[in-house]
Length: 520
Image (cartoon, rainbow, N blue to C red):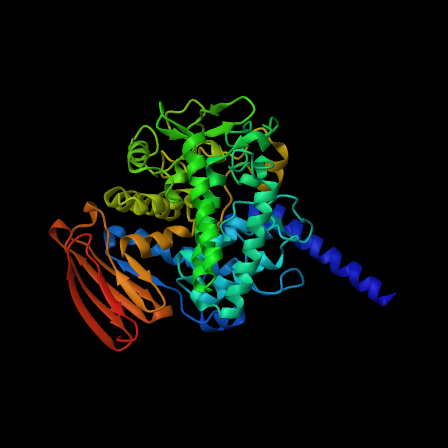
């Protein structure tokens, strides 16, 4: 009797906590919270097992919003980290207080942000997704009350390999990750692959971009049957997954598996080029396999193949033109989810606003194809926009207005009363599920930091507007402090401190300074 009463009481308390997070905390208390008052001390870090102080940047007064925003994002990232509980046996990350669960692609992006603060936390965030899998399927979301029938963009393998997180795993766990992700890849091939060799979303919610004009009305009352649409984003994510699994197989000395995954990646790339490219528009679209036609709406999904290395150089150049066109994707805050000139553009979630996660992937694509100027300039503008909105409105948001440095005109599935009741009518606040990626862009793009197991590479890429400025970056995880002054013609004069060692350097724009960790 006592045990039954305890279980009932526990369930009631969990339900009350869930409803408070969803209906009250996310809409009232968070809106009143002053994030500048969050201070992470040693005691708080120890409580969540975070070993290092958070990264910090210092920039001159004209760019003070960068350093302020950088700090706040890491503060909120820490606040949204959860300790092990009855649902998840290890630390895990919430995208925002209102989203009280473990989400697949959110966790992949959050792990990349944590990688520059604490590698063990980043790996726990990835482990949490694997621990909650349903058979071989990685679930879209798991909460106290939800076991999703859907999956989500398969980016865990990509996140594990992109920033060399795998190197922090023992060989036994590397193999465990590989086996689970290999099985997930096989599950996707069996359950989400079309006869043409490309991939479909079972439901718009599975894509993560559910009210996109590709396959939904604004309020989601009308949903397209996505099961016959070969999707450029899903297919590109599968390329990234296969490339990551091929690399991990190489680490594990599985030569046959390495070849198999590399061949699958190439096969998918050929299918994307054959079926999804529209030569007249110079763009990738969903392909309706029943009606044998493209769904010609210019959304951010049509640029994702760039991140996976799919296009030929000629096609990549045409995508670059779209990206740098101020009437399409080169907006004030760049990378709207629908091109500004598209008739379907409106400031409602995935129908126009900027989402940092997809923008991050496109920036990866620009780097992959060597478009360094666009890579640097648009990364700066994306970070600058997010940090300026934070400075003005004192919040980190889920999505942003591509044409304004405020969020007043943004809406959330207008006409959907349930979403308005549970999540409000605009973007969620304190959302670092992927908005935190702007901090990664500061570290990786602007300061040009690359960390591998054995070396640190510095290849600064500040835009022209930063000439004459001085910047400083501190990364406690590698005991690094970097000072940079940007001179004329973007000549970088710097001093690198690693522990007690100091090294000075001068670099031309595009050049790199490499230091071996053991030598330091």
